[in-house]
Length: 493
Image 1 (cartoon, one colour):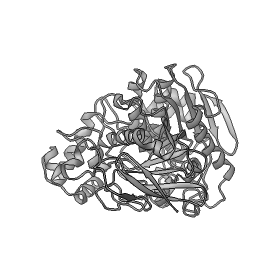
Image 2 (image 1 turned 90 degrees about the vertical axis):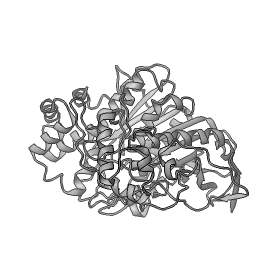
Image 3 (image 1 turned 120 degrees about the horizontal axis):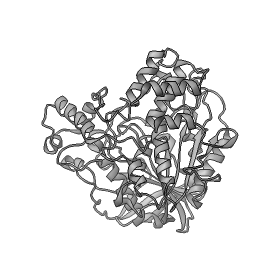
Image 4 (image 1 turned 180 degrees about the vertical axis):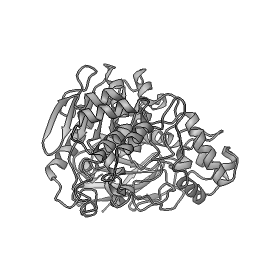
């Protein structure tokens, strides 16, 4: 059954589902980024006449297909680039009989700043709508168009897209049954790092009330010096000058190709390590890290839920056969890439994990370099301000995928947050959740906790503070612990 809603730009026709929810797909929140507009701030979308069809998925940001070795990540990354210029869009999932005062959650997908979209199977928001939340997912510019720091263009254009989507939510979400003054911005991986960046963006103040950072980093931004190396390499590959007018003449196809050729640039400088440890040449570009801006008071009026997974680094080692084959030299090299005192760091991890294999040590250091250290820094910075609450979690459920080695790795919590653990493509020996039946009760409880936080600002455990770092360890059993990895956390500070 069709369901028509009128937005500021025009009317849209969605689908009324049998479960009492309604979905609206491919609604523009900003103008199509064409030509030079790909490197400009997002602009308002032109109004349309009549009723726009919002029943089928639309295009997404230009990107190449992304894979991670032997694990099937297609539910996470999607099928790659679905072409079309009008891709700065949102999907909205809402109770069909919404009354205009429901909590709103706005999700920012991950994908290393170069991949992902609202089309990915993991981001079906029907469970949120079923449980009384208006769920919004969004596309944003990726790769060179979204995050390459180009002279003459604004920085962090993908982040500016997210802020524009939040403004669209403020103007339009009441028509879908949502409360524009009770918005929770949440994201995972690159999307979580963007959420941290938005938290520290003065122009976003007042657009959201709460934030959830799932495996992101408050220390994940490149400096302008580091970003300039990526820009120089991209311009050299394309045979152009590193200026915005030169990039504006390049097709999306060539920009996507160039982005895929930029891996492996050494971004270490005399004063900064590479916060992404070589995994992506794109990130936010800021000379003040989000955690530092939050420590100075930005985002103090926003409640924060933040956490990581127990074995984040496994995703980057196990599927490419680098986990079981890791050596002491590999552990040392990972530490040297990510810490100013690598010998002390490795000693700390060996003392705290005396029975650990080299693979486990390497994964732990890598995961904390990418996500743990930056999450601890952001949590501590936010908790230092009393205007709002900070809550921390650690997701510890282990996937049995890839002969049981994938574990509580990066992204494995997402099906539980979206209550989608029964998706067939998530099951199997090489699928994200592994061959075993995932615990449905854990999915119900975790999804319900995210809904509770968006509704009330309290997930159900004690706040995280600078003196008592209360953290909920989430598994089949939930256990609140204080500073669960304090020795390793202190090694990063």
